[in-house]
Image (cartoon, rainbow over all chains, first blue to last red; front, top):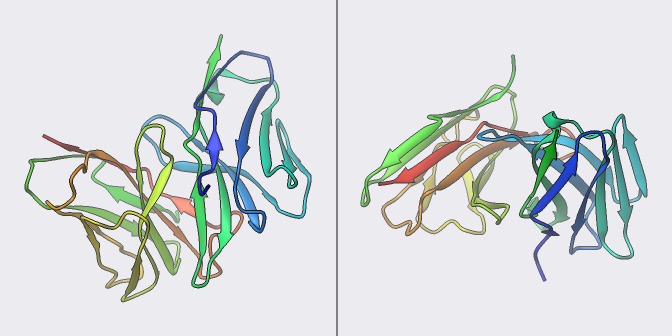
Length: 113
Length: 115
């Protein structure tokens, strides 16, 4: 189908690792993104990965990309209460007139102190 | 500081009224976008504009209208034809190269409630 899929909720204990999973749809997508949304705010780009990469690490964040299965994951090490937010996966698909960015439904991460 | 500003943060509308949401950016971006966010549904594209005086419909344009008279501004009007307008609306902008890795920015959003 057309949809980017994510589970809607995830709950972890402070200090544990969080893994948020995403399944995208277009094997020709060029960029894959993770955005963070705090309550009542806009989206903030956390990290992104080019489609020709398998992994990207940025401090506490690790992105893994499995192109064969069209699966993307975001791992947050040593999760803190400030990481509680909604996390959106998005893929950038090439269209004729512009690159269309498709967002998943978002995963609401709750961090338990 | 460069950024993208949406106003107002909260907006209430009576049924049958049109209402306009403001989006202004000083990032010198050519492309601007409007998204609608509903719980559990991600962001859906309403309209986008790649250049001044030009805009295209996104996936859910019915009941909405836009204008792009200035590079900095891309207001969205929610008309009375929009059957279910209560939602969180997000504006974004990006440079002409498209929605690249780090160049796209979002505003803080406007929460519209129909009363």
